[in-house]
Length: 228
Image (cartoon, rainbow, N blue to C red):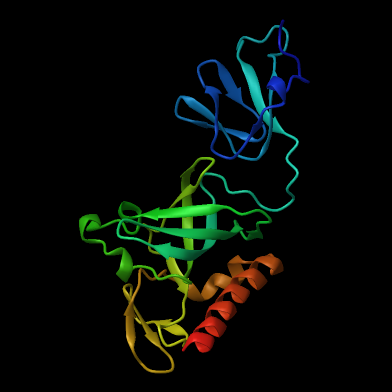
């Protein structure tokens, strides 16, 4: 039986980045995007197929994702995000996405910055431990994603660390593209520093986004004092 606009494909729930079908046979509708020959979900919701209009020269059905209940921002490829680094490993760093295109998120979205996505030059020489530390706030570009995690890139001048605390708990101030200095001790730490880091508040026009970012920094500082 032909699909109708109310078909939900068995009520199946899909998540951002999940494969919906092949772009050779399907068009990407709302809540979906084309990724090469694949069509993927950009939001969480129910997959739905809409048949082509009568007489249309393109006989491909349109796949949509509907019924998304979250009212906060949802990461999509091409979005500029603000994220808080949670863990650093030899080949990648993980981070919790706080804001998407200046809007706060209301669900948990995990991002990953791979070694090859830290910077655009001398990729083979990237040291993840000298690029990011847990608690750092970074500005990154979302490239790809699936139901488990989103891939983030800081391989542009304006992307990278925008706010950070030193190992002694002081605020770090950028002094070069690769170094930040503690305001309290003068100690220098290595980072992949974002250009124009001071425009972060202007980017976080959503006040909840700004509050969440500042709150995460405050928690880190308090934790350092408690354990210091």
